[in-house]
Length: 70
Image 1 (cartoon, rainbow, N blue to C red):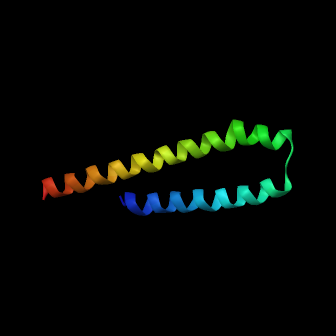
Image 2 (image 1 turned 180 degrees about the horizontal axis):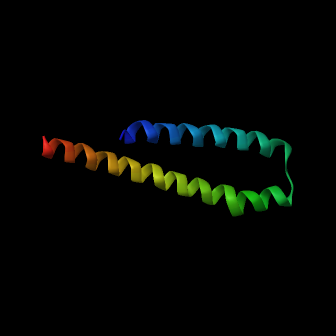
């Protein structure tokens, strides 16, 4: 299990998705887009950022467990 690699993949996917969302926002500017952003995009972004923080904490715990068990 390589949490660091998976965390990096998730972070990169979020970064790519955020960049694409910015592109979409430049051509889609109406109430539906704003509702989507507020109702879906922002909440998903918050959840992914929370997952990244949790993965950071888990990686620290795993390093300590490996150290303690060796």
